[in-house]
Length: 210
Image 1 (tube, rainbow, N blue to C red):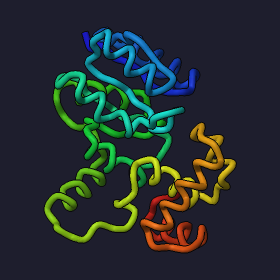
Image 2: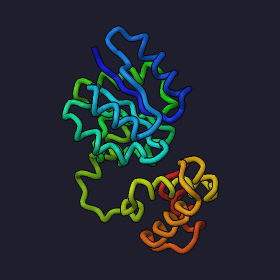
Image 3: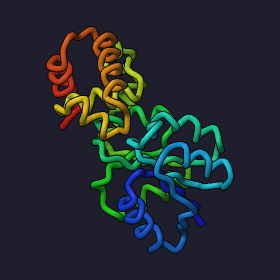
């Protein structure tokens, strides 16, 4: 029996995932959480085989707790299920320890296949992402500016690239407007840019936004 834990801040999403899993005879949902802290608290007490993890949650993001999850057990496999397209976060997630990455637009049967794949010790990514990961590994090219950003800074950059205001971003990722402004300043400094317009053009050029 594959023991599965679901970490997502949307109750409707958690319920939908549970319904898909409950139709499988070899899978069992052992718990769920709406944020990072609840996830870590639960998994310190109970053993799961696969964690289905959202990236955007209140408090620490899914990317920020990936390393914590990997330290809990070498047999714990993390499958990131996100609203963000692969181009934005998939590479970061895999490099941070996730066993797979897929979007919430994926079909139910694809989620089931992904769970079984990561549970067996494999990786679950699209062919395009697999090719990119191999290319990154084999080449020693200079990292693009956005690779210098922390996971949270990168998330804010992507949202800014979508044209969202500081207030909208703050609401979406459960942070204060002041904190978002601080992240914006750090992003501009690290990327050696001076305005939101420059960041938006960069995001579009590098396919960080749809």
